[in-house]
Amino acid sequence: MGEGRVRVCHSERSEESRSISEIFIQEFNMTNTLAINGGKPVREKYLPYAQQWIDDADIKNVIDTLKSDYLTTGPKVKQFEEKIANYVEAKYAVAVANGTAALHSACFSAGIKKGDEVITTPMTFAASANCVLYQGGNPVFADIDSKTYNIDVKDIKRKITKKTKAIIPVDFTGQVVDLDSILEIAEKNNLIVMEDSAHALGSKYKGKKVGSISHLTIFSFHPVKHITTGEGGIITTNNEEFYKKLTLFRNHGITRDNSLLINKKEGSWYYEQLELGYNYRITDIQCALGISQLDKIENFIKRRKEIVNLYNKYLSQINGVIIPYEADYSNSSWHLYVIQLELDKLKVGRKEIFEALKAENIGVNIHYIPVYYHPYYQKIGYKKGVCPNAEKLYERIITLPLFPKITDKDVEDVIEAVNKVIKYYRK
Ligand SMILES: *Cc1c(COP(=O)(O)O)cnc(C)c1O
Image (tube, rainbow, N blue to C red; front, side):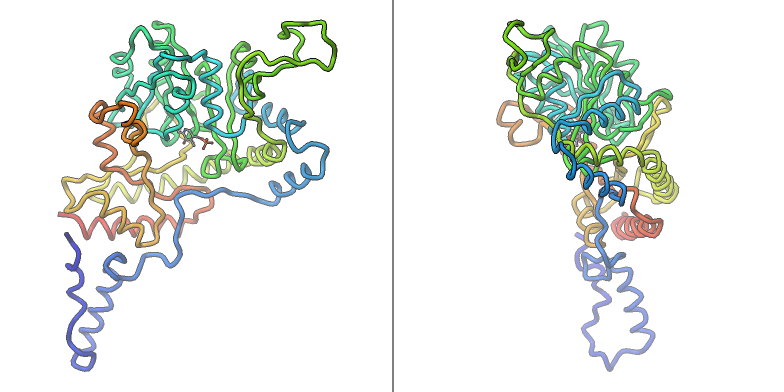
C-alpha cells in the first residue's frame, strides 16, 4: 500500500491549463514525494552504510613493506600483534587471515570437538556460529535481551546442558555484553567464554577495554570494522596455553618449537605437525596497514560517537523510531547504528521502509538475519521459533550509515530521509 497515494500531484491536465501556484504546489510536493514513488531523492549520491578510512600513512606503510624482505609472516605480524595486545591490555594476540579464522582458531584452542555444544546469539553474522560447526560442535542459540539486543544471560542459563563447553557472546553493534554475569555462569559450569568482539574494538566494559576480560576475544579487520587490514582478524587472551594452540592452528598445526616437539633430536631443519591446523596466516602487508590504522583508532571512535550522538538527538524525536539503548556497564565504540521501527505505528512493514530509504540514496542495511533462519541451518535441523525476541527484532531493524568519514551533512541527509519516509508511512 502507499503506492500511488503521493502521485496525486502527477496531474493529468496539460501544462498550459495549470496556474503558477498549482505548479509550485506540484514542485513542492515533488520534493516531498518519496524517491521510490518518483520524487527527488534526499541525496544525489548514494551513501554506503560503512567504509574504510585509508590515509597517506597507511599507503606509505604498505609500500614500505612491499619493498622489504618480507611479504608474509615477518616483523610486521609480530609488531601488529604486540600493538593490538597492548591496546586491549591482553598478554597475547595472534593475528590470522580474517575474523572467521579467528573464531575457528578460538574454538580449536578451547578444545571444541564433535558433539560439544556452544551457546551463542542468533543476532550476529553467521561466522559466530559456523566456527562451532567447523569443529564438529553444535551451536545452541540463546535469545537476546529486547533492550540491548545482546544475548540474554537468563536464556544462556536455560540452554546449558551436560554437553555445553563454551559460550560465544557477541558485542552486537559495539555494545559490550554483560561480561560479569556471563563469566560467572561460565565459571559455575566450567565453560570457556569466547567473546566475538568483531564490532567492539575499543569498547569498554565497566571502564576496561574488551580483549582480556573473556578467556578469548576475537576481532575482525574487514574494511567495515573499526580498523582494517583488508581481510584480517586477531584473537587476544591472557592464557598461555590458548596462545600456543592458536599459533599452531594458524600454521597447519606445525611447529619448530623445541619444547613442543615429540622427537627432539632430529636437527635444526626439523619441524613437526602436531595437530590438524590450517593455513590461516595473515601477511606482513596486511599487518603494516593494521599498524598505521591502529594509530587512528581513538579518532575513529571519537567521530563514530559524534555521529551516534547526532543520530540519537534527532531520530529520538521521530515518532515510530526507537533509537539504540546502551546498558550502563557498556561504553560502545559503535560499529553499527541500528534503529528499530515501531511497526504498530506504521502502515507498512520494514521492507517498504527499507526500500524507500534506499531509493533516497541512503545505504541502509540489516544486521542481522537470525543465523538459524539461513537455509543451511534449516537444512541441518534448526527450527524457527526458538528465539522469539531475536525473531521479532529482525522484523523491525534497519542499520543506518555509520563510519568516520561521513560528514555532518551526510548525517543530516540520513535524518531527513528517515523523517521523510516515516512521516509518509505513519498511521
Ligand atoms: C565481521 C564479523 C565476523 C567475521 O569477520 P571476518 O573478518 O569478515 O571473517 C564475525 N562476527 C561478527 C559479529 C562480525 O561482524
